Image (tube, rainbow, N blue to C red):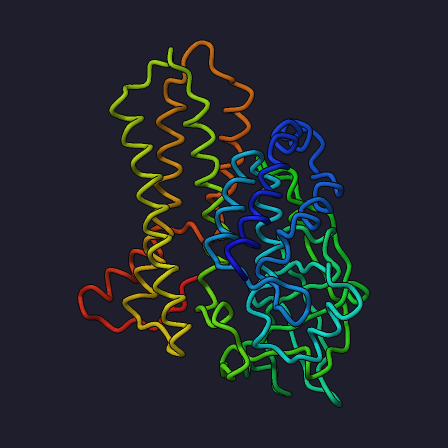
Length: 368
């Protein structure tokens, strides 16, 4: 994707931000993002940013997707979180069977996917494929998607797990059960998806344990699998922090040193993320795979960015001033309190692995 095309998409997304911000209270009140907003983001090119080029995508630089997601979240965190996850679910699919991608985007280049990579599905071998059943919780944007990408365990005749797999399932084969009623992020529609029994042909399955990167896989899709998924859970927090810091009034009594530290923490996080993603892309373009040090540094800085964003928002919330927009701050605080519960923001889990590595201990964890 050329820089001109990238700037065009960002400019188109930014033109939508005032109306998205104006609708944020309604999204929170009614618990849904207007489908017309999703359509406008399609028109802007946002959902094509991480989509494979052969199927109408742009294969943009990750930084462009992350920037657009952060700015959407600053305008409305529900909209940014929803769009961010619907967008990232098109990433990395070049490693899948091309027949499956043709089924998804051949007839509809605008098709969106929801996802869940908790292995709560069960795959049993049958002729020419598998029989799938399971329930996946908190699938953001399930009602905006026409496909689901989900994890499942392949089990043998004895019921023992034999493989950790991902499957692609069309909307006709699953049911969305509306259960989302979060304290915050009320418009993301993170509902349950249920498959009561569906045939999944071989070409719609993918083994995480036997991953191979063929020559046709673009550099963008050669990034380690957790990279953009974890960042999709962090950029909305950074966007919310920037919104709260920008909303602070001069009359607020928060100590200036605390606010200066909050601004510095957010900027530091953005710089670290840019550096790490750039290093990962350089490695991918060179045909290599990042070593443990780079992968753990990336995950460490990402999870600390989530933590710093929450602390920056807390600095404003502690003493916002008498004329502060309390409705805005209360809504953003609820959104952040909900978002930080995502596995991508599990600071203790990540730092325990990073610490083991720093002391030369064996690390074989896949940190999601």
